[in-house]
Length: 72
Image 1 (cartoon, rainbow, N blue to C red):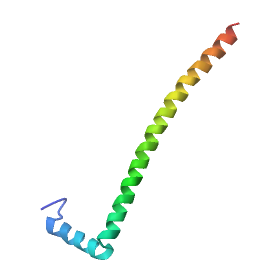
Image 2 (image 1 turned 120 degrees about the vertical axis):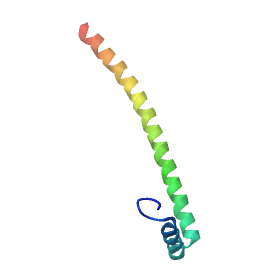
Image 3 (image 1 turned 120 degrees about the horizontal axis):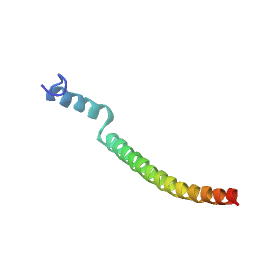
């Protein structure tokens, strides 16, 4: 038995049917597109973290100036 009652032969049969339906070239293109989307997503997450870090530090400086002006 394999994954939750699905045997390895069932998985191979499903894989063979998918390959027959779509063909290897189309599956390769889908895989490449999916990989590109994941890379793009990871890059945007990193860019967002960097932008958030720089925004947080600039907000602290602005808040510090406002507090100093309020005391004067």
